[in-house]
Image (cartoon, rainbow, N blue to C red):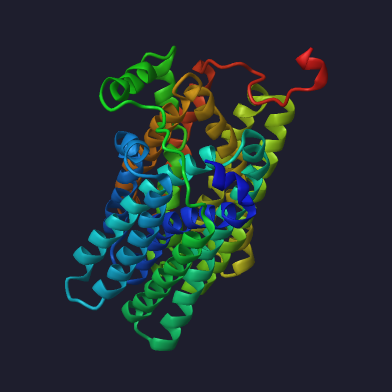
Length: 426
């Protein structure tokens, strides 16, 4: 891929990973807030929006197609354009009486294009950069990924809240907001059409069409201690997967329904801006500590850091504070713990994927991770409406126990992830 390596990665890496994260946050997070403001029940919201994770669950099954057909540049540009069209369709669908069915359809198309884009973008990154460049730009891509999350979960939600107050018509406000999202993504696609190198090697990645494809799955499930590993992947975020679906509805719901009665703009600022900045800082700290000490020293502490702050939501539900500063503090602490605790989980996925087909095995691992978010998320709304917010958040705290307990049965080198020193190399 000679041309991509002659073009400075600064021209295309930031925009590529911004374009990867922006669709994801719109589909998985912003959709929840939109449906809440359009007065769907929590049961409906959790069930419907959890289905949006399905493309990420099953993407390992079609990832070889992205490798074997056409170029990754064409795939990722087409998927960016497809997302723009799907979100524009969602915006227009809000004008119809059957808007719920139509928007769910277009959101699912957007989710499919986003998941497929992930495959192409990550593949392009690996073949478009030399090994030393990949290491250098990992921080750059993470930074722009997080900036896109803040744009979607923060600025887009704040815009929707402003339009809600101005127009006094939530459906119209969200229709305009999603049209703006489609416009942003279309402009980003045009930029990437110019910035991303055009010549790509004809070498195809990792998996041959038939036997090689099935071998990938067979060898993954033949790994030592794989049953325990899969249980850990599915259970580690059992509590958090339900909290993340109900956090925004809780902040938005009236106090009479057990919520905190925040405005859409306040949720965009607190959860989508302050919370994501805090999450990013937690992730950075987690990565630093593991690189210094190894996974073994921190995996237990990180599991507790991810789950214990959920107790703050129990307190918020019981006391329903009117001072927004209390809510800000709780969200910042919980999101910092989430980012910190998630670091060990992602590193374990990398460890499980080690081997000749680690790219494909990592895709399977992340598919299982998405399944672990999808299934609990689907029932979270029903559980919340059955229990009320107070007992639901108590349940979220209890649900963390299996994922923490199973850590004692994991098998991995304690110093895995630790940065090698000159002495350790000798």
